[in-house]
Length: 161
Image 1 (cartoon, rainbow, N blue to C red):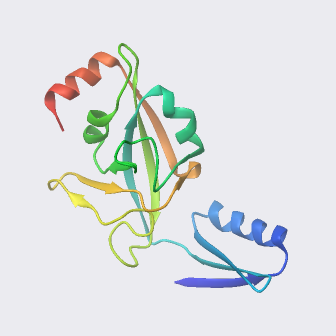
Image 2: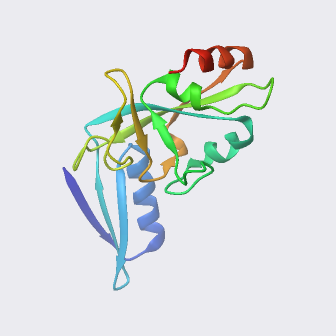
């Protein structure tokens, strides 16, 4: 169900928006003629996804996983529904831990599975789908940060995903 609230004070609008986000709501904010309009919804489900990286990017990702541009040479971040794919795509420096972020992302699935944070999935197989980020994932969605020893990461590289 979608909700709508109009504010004239920026501080009150920010407090209201923060309160909604704290409850895992999804907020879209726009300003029309000095009125701040918050449209929001509370998702009916969440999706666990994983993103592999290296230690250089951990602090930036802890703030937010940005979209549509990021560090990835393709120009966007990808996440996977399976841990192994994310681990395979992690890029640790030699003899340093590989890092895999685990995110719990609220979804409305209003337009397609994964909406509003992801573009439609590429289904690799029955076990795994990959998503490109459509919208930035805030730090509140981080469930866990996994550190994987370099030698274990090499084993996963050999296994593929």
